[in-house]
Length: 156
Image (tube, rainbow, N blue to C red; front, side, top):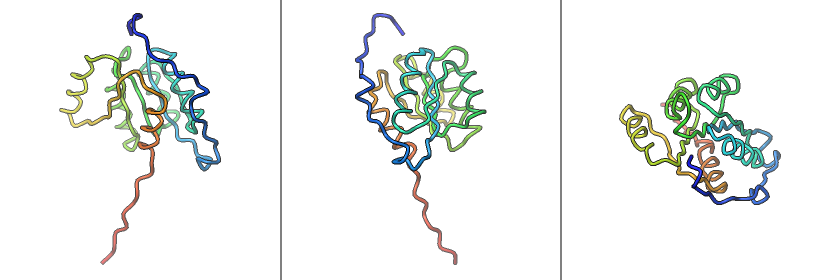
C-alpha cells in the first residue's frame, strides 16, 4: 500500500464486544490474510472481540498451512499477496473446504481483472474495498456465517 494513503481509524473500544454465551459457546474460525500485518492483526482482533476465532496470516502459503491445521468457516483475504494471490488462495481453500465462505478485499483497482478471470473460471467471490469499517466487516461476516435454513423434503 502506498505511504501517502490515509485510512480512518476506528478505536477498538468502538468495536462491539460479544460474549461467548451469546454465540452459544461456538466461535467460528475466521482466517484473515493480508501482507500488511497491522491490517490482518487488527481485523483478527476485531473478529475475536466480536465472538469469532480470528486468525491472522500474512501470505497465501502460510494461510493455506493454517487452514489445513485449523479449518476456517470463513476466509477473508486481500487479493494482492506475495506469492499466490488471494484469489488463488480462495480457490485452494474452497477446493479443500467447499462450505468455507470467502470474502476478498482490496485497496487496488487493478484487482478487477483478477476477479473477472476467476469469475470466468466459475469462481464467484464477494469483493470489499479497503478501508473496511469494522461494523461493515462484522455485518458481512455475520451474514455469511448464518446457518442456512434447511428445507424439509417430503417423502412420497
